Image 1: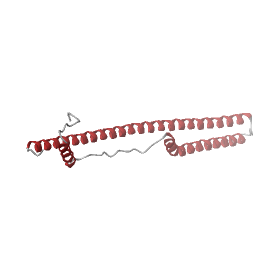
Image 2: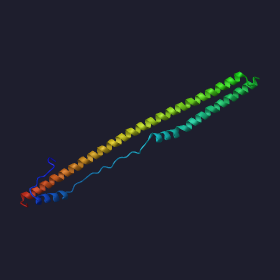
Image 3: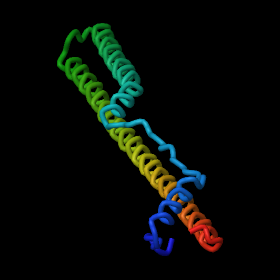
Image 4: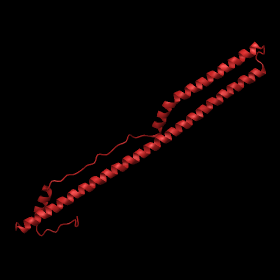
Length: 172
């Protein structure tokens, strides 16, 4: 559309143009927005915890049971040799308990690192998807606006041509 204003010499022609313009059928597009379910770190953390926590708990329990079994075997061995509860036995059992606690602490550290990694990856994927959705929505809106503007421009041009035909036929 070269000029946004139309200079029509009299009110009858202006009214005729307005009626012609309004009567011209045109198509408009209203894009449907794409949506993405909201996600936050707390929700992602809860999901990751729910999926990984049972494995941590099971592993920690199994390691603690193995330590208890090992201490029982040490007791049985020491008593069978007649050592009773010697300092060697106490030291050996203490080292076994500390090793079990260290192993469990390492499991918990790996668990925490896995949770953090899972949260970061999930949030990065979510943010990338959100950006893609936002870009698609903006692109769709722009395309619809361009189409709608071209429809209005065509209607304006067609109304002007009809009005000029009427003028040339002496209808005004």
